[in-house]
Amino acid sequence: MKKLIELFKDEDKRVVLFLISSAISLIISFLHIGNLKIDAAWLAIILCGIPIIKGAAEGLIREFDIKADVLVALALIASVSIGQIFAAGEVAFIMTLGALLEDRTVAKARAGIEKLVHLTPRTARVICNGSESIIPAEEVQVGDTLRVLAGETIAVDGVIISGQTSINQAVMTGEALPVDKGIGDEVSSGTINQFGTFDMKATKVGADSSLQRMIRLVESADASKAKIVGMADRWATWIVVIALLSSIGTWFVTGEVIRSVTILVVFCPCALVLATPTAIMAGIGNATKYGILVREGDALERLSKVHRVAFDKTGTLTYGKPAVVAVESFNADINSESLLELTASAELRSEHPLGRAIVSHFKNISKSTLKEPQEFAMLAGRGVKALISDNTILAGNAELLVENSIVMSQDMLEKASKYKNDGCTIIYISANNCSTGFIALSDTLRKDSIDMIKKLKSINIESILLTGDNPQAASYIAKSVGITNFHAECLPEDKLLAIENYQNQSKMICMVGDGINDAPALKKAYVGIAMGGIGSDIAVDAADIALVSDDIKSIPHLLSLSQKTMSTIKWNLSLSMLLNFVAIILAMTGILNPILGALVHNIGSVAVIINSALLLNFKNK
Image (cartoon, helix red, strand yellow):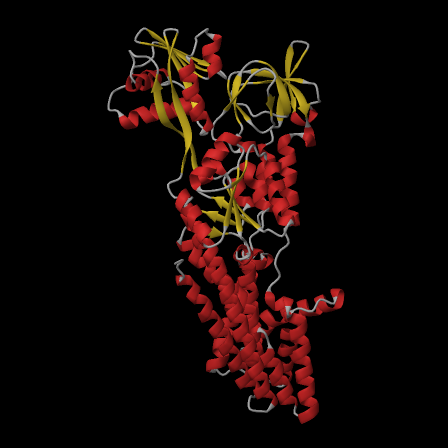
């Protein structure tokens, strides 16, 4: 009994139960099963019809809101009044089914904001008069000195006043690699201290901190995105007016109420209501076969109007993982293979993503076993120092070598500069206090990125790059994939502002991203597409569509599918309206009675469903 009560409290489950019961009752009524004293179709009228009549009446009385439900309610009442119980039950069932399909295609995506809130640190380590105490993060004041240990999330925005470290800023910028920070550098709330301990002075706290601003951006972007109203409801006022005028006019001219009621039955917009949700459901089914999860029902409708797609770089056009692209030796006694082996051995115990990438690269190309370092030290914000076979190896950024009075040749610096201009990160290496060479690492392009951008161009879709990376890295990636329009060094609010500027010029944007920092832009964009495989849960929650397998080559198919879906919807609407008007003329002349009228309008519904089902096998040529 308790489970039954809970079932009725859940609106979705209740509607499904009512539909199943109504379908059974209609079958019994149509086939005349059993010797029932009353028509079984009454059950469908009670379960599905009464909520429609109630909703139409409330909308009409309270807000004078004329929707398709008004005409449905009139058709139901008229059918019952002349004893056409099966026709009334059938209409109620189809309309309720259509409404359920529409509701099921619209997702509620608010969980992302809650997850962002959970990212906010609850405590902070405050230093006062030399003593350390832990206080709630919301009590931190501007000017307070905070200490952040390795692995901790930074509670508020601030400036480092002592110590060196590397900060994982993916939550804010989406950058794949940690950023080295030292005295005087700014740090943001929500970012993670990778290595070492540092002290910082709080500059922005509470609602002013970066993470809190991003939460507000997601909320405001979500609220400003209007939902598209079903086409049947857009045209409902005219449909109701035409149907009523036709019905009253026919009654006035012929004096036959049966013809008047038949007009209301055939004009009942079942096919019109089914036109959009059935096509969208079929489009969603097609997308699923390509590893695309459509989370918002009207996303395909919106996507069909998009002519520009904005891409995040890291994790979207690229794999989001550093990879070795070059090993350059500037020591005649050490070739590039030996330099890679020495550096990989030095980085063997490193936890830094760059160090792990170097070790992984060596293991992929060589069968040799790396030597364990005799000594190893992680130098926060600089690199590593290790003793390999009595060779002292330093591997890290330029500052590491400069601080150890190691001079780098002009030739080496110029060669490294060329790689930097291509967006690479450089690991400089010295052996026994002599500069030896460098290893260049870069976030590598996805193998399908270039082809995908070409296909978008072929269907007249412009591509835009929005990235938190520096201008050199952004320019290099943009040129590599064939994008001419790019925006570099974008924080979450910058990406949102760029999209807002385009859309204020009536240039609807589809945003494709993977990180937490992309969530506001995904919400603000006319359509948001998240990388569902490697992407953040928060990005997926903020998006309308998710690429489950991160297969970006399916994006051109998705855009073509959205256009095909809208084309199908328009055909469905045209077919249903044409059939309705033909049926009205036949009803006016008395050729159709209510039973035949119900049959004709059901033929329209079936035709719409069949036409929509063809979308399931659509392939992008």
